[in-house]
Image (tube, rainbow, N blue to C red):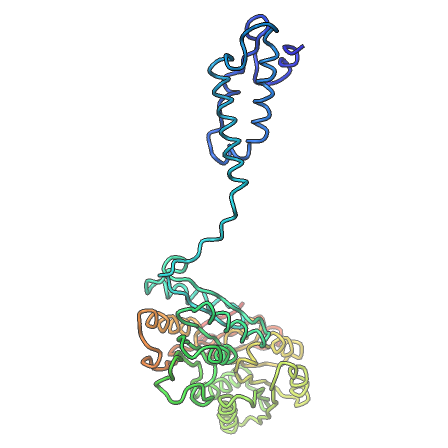
Length: 400
């Protein structure tokens, strides 16, 4: 009966009148350690069962037992017991925490509203050119508020607790949160406002204590934006400026835009946008002005609400000019402002100098030197606008 049963099981053959012998491949162990652990329970059960059948197949009264079953079977038993012990050791071993970064690898904190195509990739690539390869010679911790202003202080405090070597803060809310969280960890800021006017730093070009970096605010840009909108919409006679009165830099932008409007013969009105909850009312106020064009004056508040602003201008067929290419990427018609690629390259340069021992107070504030004109042709088509060829030829980027 044992022989008949064994005949039905794979891996055995008849040996002698009543004996069984495992096929050679049946006692050969798996080659890889991973296979050993995965196959252990079934392999061990199968081998023990085979040995039991082998022992039962020996006639009663015979003095031949498992101990004399032959070298292959003895090796199979030893192999099975060894693997069983290894499996038990793996199961019983305590969990090992994830490896911590090398203490000699500097950590960088990155605090912003959200990731953008021109931000972290440019920062990482530029750091790599300076010899800082993320994951190998430097570690970067990214923290994003995703439009929730109350998250900035939490993220800043977390980065401070991590004791990062430097914090890169993008925009006013991130900069203010980082400054409130630490007065010792160096901060590299990217400010949309003039940091001197907003009193982030005491004087230019030397920054304060642990704060340095760059500002995208450059005098004359607001005037240039209105000129571009006038070229794109020659019939432009009435325009509205959307601005945040809480920002001193934006207030300067508004005065500059008003002066440009008088020169260009454009009647300009202004609508305030103070906080997120005012966006709907502010846009309704813009519509009530019945403008032929909109000038969005840039700060972190406008940037965070760019999707809503762009959707409004598209729905109401209102040509608009924006301060940053983020608006054009979101569907806005026209943008003119600093090149984000240039901005993040400059920011990475500050980080490199600080990681190599420079003090923030010894690094003068910087401003971008490259500016880009982006025209969204899809938006122009929706607005039923025919962009002059002279403007198309000057564009740094066309979105088709």
